[in-house]
Image 1: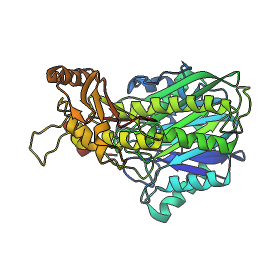
Image 2: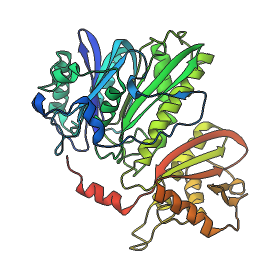
Image 3: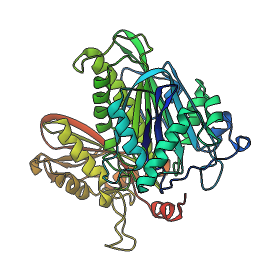
Image 4: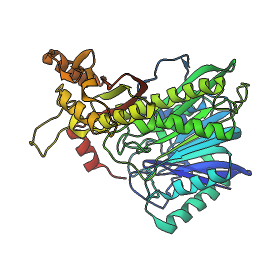
Length: 462
């Protein structure tokens, strides 16, 4: 059987290879239903892919894990490759990626909530509904197969069949022959799935789970059309932990809600967003069959860390962005309430960009380097979570702007300089908001919106 997954700049698909399920996803910024390829002589070799774009900065949260190289191939049992197959409208940056597992891996997926889901998304969801394991994920850049109707869905089925036969047009045989368990293999795959991304996103950690060392790694892409409910992104997560299917799927959803569903760039949610997670079980760790076990909590923390690291890299690389915005909310009764307020603030266009309706050159808080606490308070207030205004506390970096609902005197020049430095170094602007005395805590990430965002999207072509 075959499973197909799609993403708005890239896609993944799962197919049956020697009677083993393979996940595959095809997607792009625009929708196409024809898969192009080139002769093998024009394909970029594995060790050349990294010259096209650099790697994103690693933005892992702190925790009891150690960062390790390799990304999706860091965990035992996985191989990957990325290469040029002629699918991009211009240039010869790698555009095909393949991630495989040596054994039947426990598979899980989270997808766009857009009602107009692309054909590969529909196909992959159906496949995961009928199968708990998969062996490979095939990804291409430059082709979305979205809004293509019945013909597009048929294309997905045909391509899934092609993958099963090791023949996605002319490119697939060489792609499969080039699979590698080396760091170069993981890095080349991370480059191949990018579109308007300026950096590739790849990370892996090693941690102790149930007394054994377990690795969790992953890669993702995304730069524009990023918003909660999966945003416009594609991700592949791998681990060698041993975990049951129902637990793994719940873990992935929890981690997605703490990472990819907490980032925003421009408020658009794609037709193709997909994250696939594969667990090989080859680490020798204790089998995790209960979400309430200590081992499950250990693995969840590592999965959260990897996916948050990738999510922050996506927001950092937002189209035209000059800085990452990290919003931390505390004091709610529940985590979900804090998450909703954090998303509201991170998503506020007025807080992070410019508003041409007010003035042709009126810049708002972050991109305009203006420490305007009122816009932050406004975004927290319309999030739909009840709190008393007198409990509101807002900080920008180390500067407290508001406490107990009252604006405070502060060094405006120093606060503005903090924003300016972050923009000049493509650093992080940290916003802290407290709304009460509860134990709820969550974070969200975004970026400023600049003139370059409009330019990039005006000039984008597939």
